[in-house]
Amino acid sequence: MTLAIALFGYAALVATLAPRALAGAWRLRSPRLTMTLWHASAASVLVSLVLAAATCVTSPGLIQTCIAALVGDTGATGVLTVAIGLLAPVLLLARLTMVAIAGARRRRADRRRHLELLSVLGRHDSNLGVLVVSSTSAAAYCVPGTDKVVLTSGALHRLEPAELRAALAHERAHLAGRHHLLVAWAGILANAFPGVPVFRDLLPATANLVELLADDRAVRRSGRAELVGAIAAFTDGVALSAGLAATGGQVSVRVERLLDPAPPLPLTARLSGAGVAATLVALPGLLAVLLAAVAAGLAACPLLLR
Amino acid sequence: MRGLGDLEAAVMDRLWAWEQPATVREVLDDLRRDRDLAYTTVMTVLDNLHRKGWLTRELDGRAYRYRPVASRQEYSAELMRQALDSSGDNTSTLLHFVGEMTTDEVDAVRRALRSLQRRARRESQQP
Image (cartoon, rainbow over all chains, first blue to last red; front, side):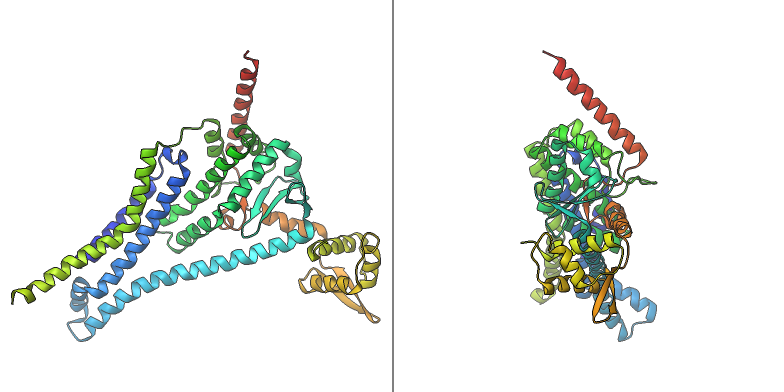
């Protein structure tokens, strides 16, 4: 039972502390490391919750006492305990699976419809290797799962050739890095458990970090000033949001970061960051094994002494 | 060789431009002006577009007459609605170069660009 409490406590700690720890300004200096730490924290919480629930089945102690107090110590108590212990992880995983399937279905339908519209309304520009759709609005995007990058004629009209190369490099970085998978996974966790801080904040964090990763690649491919120019060229043509910046937004953060680039984190910081990420993933399992071994040792003692 | 997707676009372009229902033969005759096509190819394309809900058809004598279900503008509007929606649930459906911005952000980005241009000018003026 100690094990279950330890695991629940660990999960609660990581779930609330990780979003705060990962909000520092250094996240802009190493987006890849920050991304790794976010997803390691989320995975760590998820695994400890499943393990904690599963532990209730193997060592029912406390829960059994509670149930016995509620319904009386009958034969049903043991059955109820095991049922709860089994049900919790099953419900957790079932919820994840349901949200994942619903999201995947919706995205597939949306993308299919979008590709159908593009196939009739888009004009393939073989020089640029992009699809152009005619619209005065400015938009540039890629369709994940395909190799298609789409530009509106309005965007094409606003961009200088060098800026266009930067914008395309950004979009191709999204496709090459399979960024949509990270965003989709973060979306599953956020939609399944919006009450858990680390899961809720994982989605906007991931959406923003993939933009930084794509920016870094575009800078290497084409240049800093060109990328800033490309972003600025969109300011008179993008959709304006009424409220707070949308997820995946934070355009001004991107521009500030491009104009005043801080040096990447030193190697030692990045290595220790990677160490923390590995620990986060491994810890719940280690904790479970360690405490189970101790418990087994204690249980075996009376047998040995006899 | 062009794919069926390109042909679909070409066929829709013609039907939208004509503004009246057309038969496979009429579409074929027009398309043959710039490329060599088989009757069955064009029939397949029209049939596909009908199945996908882009065209309706009515029997006229022994042949179908095909007509677009909606105007190009209506389809464009739907496409752009999807293309410009970078909010919330749509984040992983399409990945945008620049997502939605607040007016404050637009101002911040423009200020940043001006400062970059000033900096570039100063650097170019220095010997």
